[in-house]
Image (cartoon, rainbow, N blue to C red; front, side, top):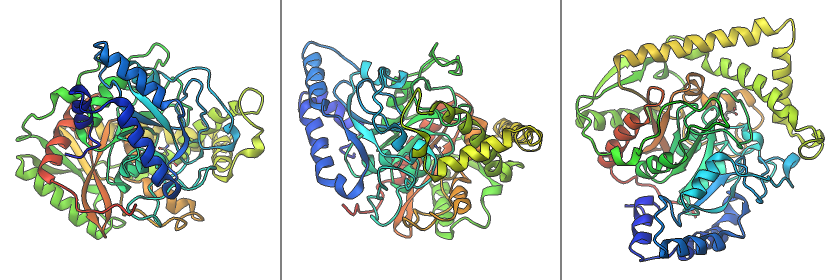
Length: 466
Ligand code: GLN
């Protein structure tokens, strides 16, 4: 098992084979050694070793926090008390939050040690990490390629062994796409499973708070900590959080999986298609029944997303006016300005009905499509990305082609359903992922299926370039 799996780390900590100070130091050393080439971190927490020492003291006293002493990195949109939080933008380059986001509070209560804050496309707008005001992040499997975005630093940090876990956000694929590009596991929980309180908002009816890990077990364990019904976020679901990691390992024979017909056509790289077929075969060998399903309106998902999200972005970024938060608006980069302009346009009178309102109706149709599909299958599977990681710079001047990287991931954000990307066999010698999509609040089912797949799939044959 990978040494960055939480199972391995927690076992060593529990058996006192290693201390939190030692393991935190190991990750800090990896960051020192590798991050000049990857640029996954905006800020390294200079108090990490103190926090680790406190965790060790607690363990000594018999404390049993679920993540006691485990180092974790956070995407730089998670508000961290006393630790700079930039959202990847110069607008907030000196912003130090006075409080912790609920998810951060919960991680700390479970004993996690904050290693640092990871790089991202500014305001989480992007699919490649190239929109960051703090420099691009490089893919550890090919330094000339993008790690995917917007949680670029989180995925690259976990992939290159600079952190065992890195939290992220997924508004339109920003956890799953980078997880797929970096050969790691990325969870977008159900909308409302993890509190958005204290996470710098992008599109408030889309933002899902999740994380990137080495394996499915670690992902399930972290969700059991961050999952929350939070009075500070009225959209958190009323469904109780379970010990997701304890429910893994159930046989999956007889489970019915749907393949989305509309995804399996032009635009999908042929090698990814082939490998996805092999992954289906593995699942069939485990006893799953695989059927074709249709999401008739899914072809409209990307256009719907790129109307609704900029509308919400234009409203959310309104608070970054240089009065209450941050530097003046002159510091906004091109992509944020483009979204604010599109959003303001589609919300303005005369255009509201033609764009915003219409897009809301299409969103409803897409939600209905998912609901219908889940009447006949237990979960849906799909490739996470239509292509392997692309080269840095390749799509920078073509926003539309960049937006199309999200075609397989943003429909799940429109529908608010959970989705988990897990590495499958590489294509063109580069990482790629398969995603498992479930009913709202049914993370248990996708964790269990993905876990069985991960065990049956075996090791992925890829070498880090760092
Ligand atoms: N690539 C998408 C966008 O730019 C996803 C963003 C996200 O999930 N934060 O909007």
